View 1: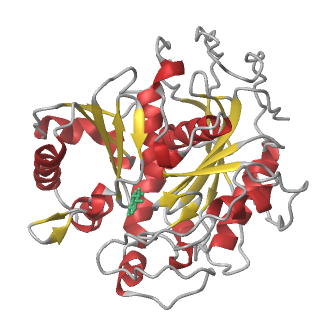
View 2: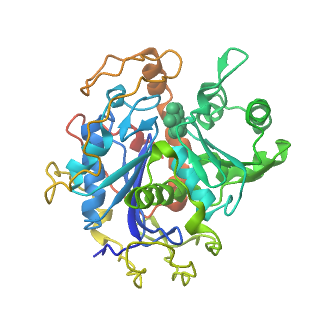
Length: 414
Ligand code: BGC
């Protein structure tokens, strides 16, 4: 049974095709148990996604803080855009929703922001000062800007325009796969994008992450930037680790609108060991070796919680390999009082071009837009990219029927 100890936070990464979670030691960034992955329900409505988030918390018997990524603009716990997810997310109070579903305090952060935090704290950008610009290439293009260890949230640079064209649908990894672009052709597009970003931001370091970062040997040598360019190290776990870190900061009173500051307590941190390759299989599912944790040599700086207790490694929930029915509709325990007590005004939506900029206050099922149709059209390619990534790293795969739809089209394609 997973035990919540101080210093451990459940990180959950919500993506277009999978929702992944594991408890994280926020001192080291290491996952304390094998990840659980549940396919993202289709349609990915707020209620359906919240049920999956609750199921992951339940699987770990989790009662402590949760950090959760979401692939959209997130301000004051409210999701304000929906480029690659159900449009009902625009204006949804995601933190409240997940807190009600799980009964735990939840912090929600943009997925690329979480990945950037994770990499700066524990990965390829560890200890880096100056301006770090993280880009994630997957279904969409995400960006995370970190200045001297402080996150500048919601930069959304995948929606920049280049020669009158939005970059995301032109240079994402999904587009590379869908249009069967050669690595050279795709890298040429990315190169143009990087040059544009250098012109605008003059970063000190680029970190390239997302699903495509696993294939860095195919394209890294084709990219040439003035700033140093490195490949993300945490790969599939950056979002989980970064989300947990964001929740950790939130618990310490830092707020996203002021930027999260990873510097004070993360300096002089040992580099995490490279993740283990899958070492065995069980019922055809890759099982990743759980490494013993390195001793934390981080100084106990102004942490209000007691020092980290010896970590209890969670036994893999063996039954998780069976299909699971999600029936979690009510919290296991009363919702934790909100940290924010004043109602938060929903800020104007800065929506990607072509999207409705009026956020509906209630989650509504909107009609398919051209963009959604495009997303549907690309479903197979998206799946191909993400599923490939999942195969390498994921331990548990479960199917979760949703109330909205019994179909799980993304699961059909391996
Ligand atoms: C969204 C971003 C997200 C990125 C990667 C974009 O379409 O607008 O919020 O970070 O995709 O998922």
